[in-house]
Image 1 (cartoon, rainbow, N blue to C red):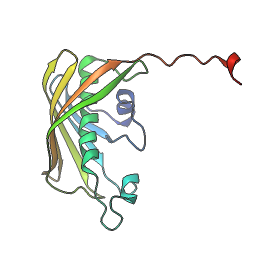
Image 2: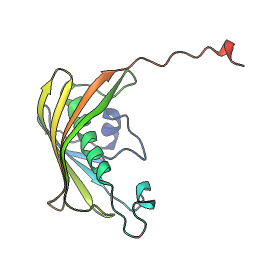
Image 3: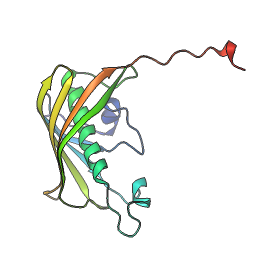
Image 4: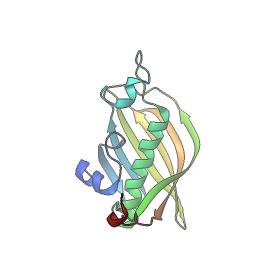
Length: 159
């Protein structure tokens, strides 16, 4: 069983603050499943506006955290790390449900299982829990795509 700290997570995901939503991987079985942790603190930038009088982590960010955990699982399964020549896109969400608010001080446990890989589309079943209670769940689809490098800038034609 693989465990990853924040340095390894940063190698597997292109996300950075304030959009990196995985703090630690506590279990990982390549080709099967991952369990990761997101520590939710009052310092999260989204709490400034969602909602100032009752801070709640947006559900879409809970789903994004599940997708990031899925990305780590896929990269580990493929034996790759994130680089500038590809991007791991979120391409679908089905059956999303939100069952409990996530608030500052909560530890979000992200559990993702691969359900199918066909061509370049990966399908997962994800569940985010807090203290054993389901906060969010969804079926996710992602794909890894090669990207063209940015064209070199011609400094001689700059004005």
